[in-house]
Image (tube, rainbow, N blue to C red):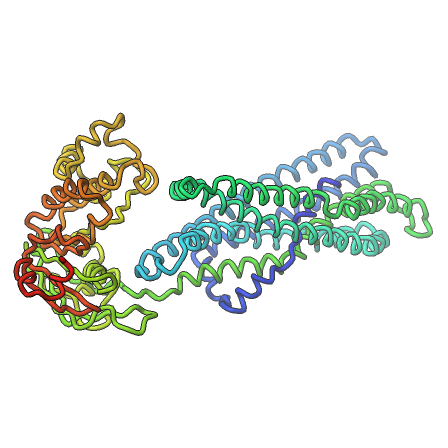
Length: 599
């Protein structure tokens, strides 16, 4: 009995005000919840039927026990005893089998629902524009995608079945108790309610402490992530804040330890009182059985069976008291998840894309009267830009910070759509091309190179999954980083580390160039690719870039003018407008904005 009480003490839940606030702000329509299970109506019905059957079958045990005590044993009827014992074993076996079937069906159905929901959210978030990822914390996206959906697991796999099981068990047990003896049932009605309420109060105290503990645990995780990641460790060492971070971590850790102790001690006196009450309940029933004027002629078997049933009714009633809080909590999680699914797609895939086979791409790019304004901005970043990148030619774009240089690259790879005008590739509006066709046609190398935390081989294969080792080495040779990779103990199988920190900045960028070479795009964007490098590294890296750009239509966003003096044409942007264009020599001779930048 005490084990059961201890287990159930952790179950009752208080409705979190934050859950109510979430649902008030973003209510969840019942039709959307039903739609999650629309493809699983059959399995769901079977699960509920199995649960109900298991609950009803389990109620046979006390009646079999009464027959054993009142009939089979006193009368020494071994045949009857054998049948009753066989029935008790059969009930146990059947209940266990039904429980396994229920768990299998419910878990399989729940995992399918969660997997589909997780995939839907992941796919929808990937469709969001770059501005969404700039304004949204990465941890928030991960929390919605992983934690929130994982939080639904118990709801999807357990709540519906638990409600059916608890309701059936509670009603069936109450009926069975009344059938055994209605007078003892009245006694139970007097004792059970205060015991249940007392249990619930203890559980709510623990619930509040648990909420605090979860918040402190989240804070502890945040401190670990900030201090022990690559960038966090670097910042800690360079600022000399290691001792301060240890002190902060120690304080948080001690707070967590204190909450753990409080959680274990919460309601101990109430729990001790409750254990006394539950120990007294069967004693009181046996006492009542000794007074025929109160209970009439009641058999010993009935008393034993009745106490067994009474011990079973506590758990389902307490479980049913939790349904409201569980429902609010699960609806709040769904509200957050549906909030992501309902995000508008600012850069949508065309419904009927114009095909653009890889081998048919010429690389003719045009910006026709292009203007762009950020969704939450008031002023244009680009205004009426007309620009032609002929196939195989190189154009460089220069200008002061904030002039709109990188926005041109953003529009060309369609991380955003222009608010005015259009960008075309081989005469096709980018909004009419599929994302996959555009990605194969346009490649990008930026100053902030991103390498996945996996092997060099896997990073390169992201560009072309069917590439052979010979192809990989050829790309690395062209990017002038093959010797560096060969010198590594694991060669292509070397893990690059978080964000590629296994390598220097120049090495990371050359690996990125090799990856782009494998993709073999006809149009190339170099977005300030050398701005973060020292002069010597830049000179080495520029040779790799020259190899990469050979024969491709190239748009170079430049910070250092020394890297673009040989471009076929140079464009000067100022406040989102083209103010000068020409060759390096022509612009210097003109003595305008470019000459001032070059001075």
